[in-house]
Length: 214
Length: 257
Image 1: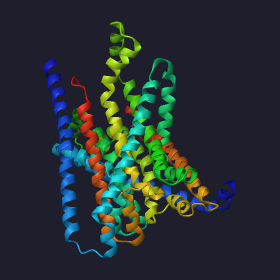
Image 2 (image 1 turned 90 degrees about the vertical axis):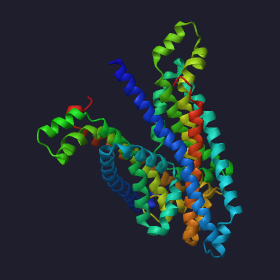
Image 3 (image 1 turned 180 degrees about the horizontal axis):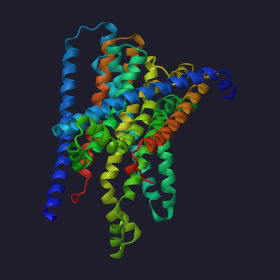
Image 4 (image 1 turned 45 degrees about the vertical axis):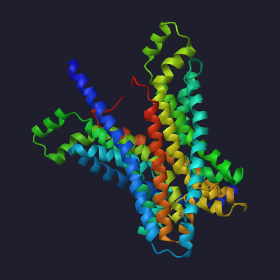
């Protein structure tokens, strides 16, 4: 296996980069979408059960099923990978963002408005910072999940390490089959844990000082 | 003041149950609508030879049956192992192992399920039982973590009160902790079912059957009708399994809660 890794070092590094880049960009997109939807939900309370229904149902749908449905619509390659990863990543963030934004004390929002802040400034300076730790927890769940979903999207020729797993599967019995699958699986685990640690640090840095725990 | 908190609490409870009620009633309706629409499309669509063979009712029912079998057997294995181990890890003598196990369970989530299945198939062999082993191993950690965390959250004063009335450790577990943790365990069952029905889709990669076969055929031949049908049927099956889990969860919650 060591020989395998040293021989293909550059390719493995490039695929790892692709994998992480797909996940990071999709999760970033998902965060924006989820926070926007959560804002909508918190301003129209009647939408809350709808949002919860959507996120329960969405998380239940198998990723291979969604991939299958998306392929005729968007074709194969990178786009279905982005769509599928973003879809699953947005659901835990949406749920947490709704909880987080609702947990913001109404009096604080009102006093911010009383100080003359408009809706956007109130959101940016009061509501988002206060809800951020909860949103970030959702973001971490999403990132872990997305690393696995991105591997599956490789079945439709998506980018990243997943293609190594499928190469291993098709070459089964061959010399390098196990190496392909094993290297990709281990690399995904390591990268997922690294990303998680990075998010933890990011959380420490971006959490507003007033609500930082220790 | 006290009436205020009671109304607040009952309000919260009614809202919660309304959400659960929405899922309990909404899921079967949603599934029926999707399945009905698909059946109408299937009956009227102009399919070529390959497509109609892949989407023949007999073939679909066989695949769905295999998928369900993978899910149910896997869930049974997961629940039969994760729940007792979770209970054992929260007993006084074993408590110190609980935190590291939860940590490992969290880290284990990072493993991509498709990699786990393929590696197991290479190590053992292709087929049903290898899929069961890989899939249950994958769902084992979340269910174990769920059981440990929720048993730990049982109010310690209740346990102490029960001890004070002269119950033994085993009786406290049976009469107080387990009933209080019952909803949790059923959530574990549902989590296991949902995880398995989703991951059973990959069973087809290691010849263990399941509806994932339609996606594989659909991608290989690039036939949109097969892809969309496979996706929709798999989604409906997953939602029905989730619904069955919710019904179980609802029925198993003790009346006092």
